[in-house]
Image (tube, rainbow, N blue to C red; front, side, top):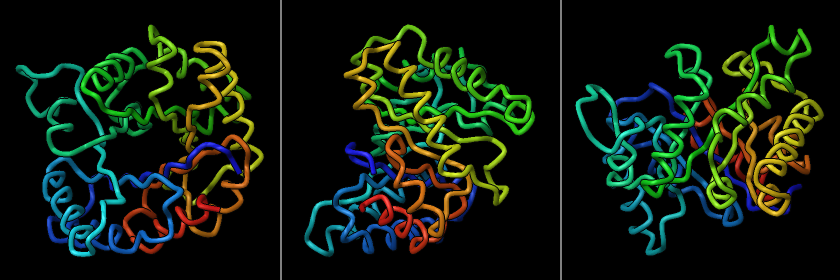
Length: 262
C-alpha cells in the first residue's frame, strides 16, 4: 500500500440523463463515510456538471458536514475562450465547481486523434486555470504483445509533460490505463500494473526530481472492479484508480475506494 494519499476517480463517460446524474451523485456523496483517507472524484458529462455540483453540495449539507466528493471534467480545450464550437475551457470547468480534469484518455487519443502535443497544450491550460489534471497514458494490446509497453508509455509521459517544471509536475495525477483492459473485462495483473507504475515514477524522477516523483499519485485504470481493487491497492506504486463502468454504480465505486482506504 502506497504512503501517498490515494485518489479514486469515476469517469462516467457519455452516460446518464439528468435524473440519473443527480441520483448517482447523491448516492456517492451520502454513502462516502468511512473513506476519509481517500480523495474521491466523479467526472460526469459536461452538460451535467452544474447539476451534479449542486447535488453534491446539497447531499453533504443535509448531513451538516463538508462535501467529501470532488467534481472533475472529462476533457478540456487548451484556450480560455474563443471561437471553438463545442469545446469547454478549463476556466468553464473551474467555474462549474470542478477541481480536476481528465486529459489524454485513450478514447480521446484513439477516437479523436489527440496527440501527446495536444494533451500537453491542454495540460498547461488546465494548470493555468487552477485545475488538477489527471493525465492518462497507456499502450494498446498490439503494442504490449510487441514488447513496446515501456517505449510507448515513456513516450506518452515525456510528450504529454513536455516543458513542465518540477512544481507543475508535482500538481498532476497520472493514470496508467492499458488500452487493452478498458471496458474489455480484462485487467492487468497486479504485477503488470505495478511494473508500469514503477516505470512511470522513475521517469517522473528523471523529469522532475526524485522528491517530486515520490509525491505524484499514479492511478491504475482498466476494468477496475471491487473484486480486483484490493490486489491493485496492495502494490507500492499504485495510488488509486480511474474507474470507468464500475463508477456508474455508487456501491461498486465506493467499494473500490474502500479497498484503497486500507
